[in-house]
Amino acid sequence: MIREILTKYKKIAVVGASREHTKPANYVPRFLMRQGYEVFPVNPFADEIFGQKPYKSLEEVPQPVEIVDVFRPSEAVYEVAVAAAKISPKVFWMQEGIYNREAAELLKSKGVVVVWNRCMMKEHNRLFHSKPLIPLGK
Image (cartoon, rainbow, N blue to C red; front, side):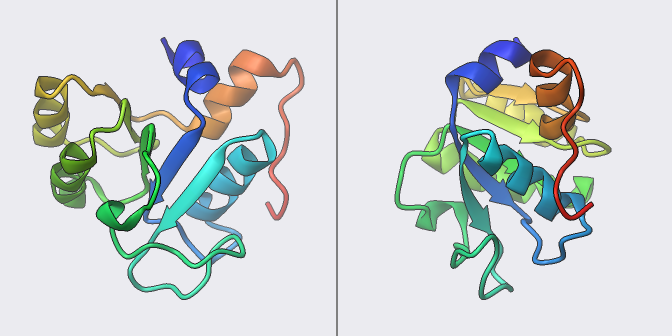
């Protein structure tokens, strides 16, 4: 299922995208961009991330989003899930160390595939590269 997700869907909103190059919320999305994914940073407190103006919320992203990739603490994920439910992504992906049962249940009830406690970069490396690619800036 992870292989299908990473092959089929290319438009990713990254909630909690970071300006700091050493944080996973920065180098994981940059890695995905280099693999051909279109990344929309969502961070209401930043002026620029990945050379783009970040969106303040998921609802502001002007294109349909296929994957919502979440880099927020587990206790903050339900609020993100409520916002995601309004834009109907195909996949709601909670990065490594992140899980919120109520968020997962809400989105599953709306037909959204939910992935948790997995890193998109690590999964991409595991499935598509015999030698893992190292993200720049790490």
